[in-house]
Length: 150
Length: 170
Image 1 (cartoon, each protein chain N blue to C red):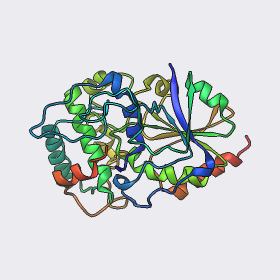
Image 2: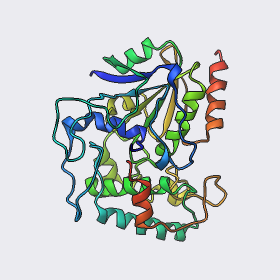
Image 3: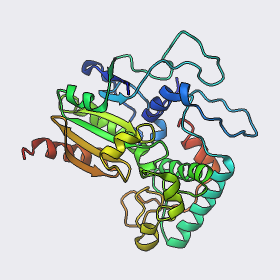
């Protein structure tokens, strides 16, 4: 039996009425959950993955000890990049996402991160942070594995 | 807006896996309300839609399904303080909190009810409470927001925070 995150139970409930067309992928996908949430394209995930590695190095920050957190945020950034054209912070609730993406304050790297190295997404963590690991790298495989059940 | 949700019955709480990585946590029986859980999960993957509904992805065997016409009704009808977790699917810290919430929910089953709200599915509720950063936790007492805090934290910190709030009579 698959393990499921609590969050997916909600998405499943609404999948029936509001499934959006999934982007086509090169291989057939075995999904055991219908999710109304969009899965980001692999291309965008790769772009945001590279960006995250580079920016962590550049800012002297590290990924979370739990790489699952890193992976989810990278996918969230990719998803927004797909739907809004810009990697809007996935750890925020917005009145109008499109307007926010245009405005830019919360586009990753957001202003709080750029100015104060504050990343509440736990994507870029300063070394003194309790949750900071030692890595500034994350592979596409790691991302796929840790988000397989989302 | 019909909100269908499942409430687990206290005696059947199962333990969740202790793994720190949320990728391994199981959605077992929990003592919290999920908002919503229309458990007619048909049409999963590439199977065609069947009329027979089988909650094959959830093990909410012990849960009681309840329907509320609004979030307010849910709050009203609760006999315990309600801890509401406002989250989003692609929010890393929110997913990080999933197993932690399971733990806390099980530990504090007699004291609080835990409800999770997907802010992308219920943006109006999120707007009503001016939710910005995710995750945001609001503890409701007597149907009114009593305490509010943001961000991920360890289970014992969350428990401490909740207990402090519950004891606060102001």
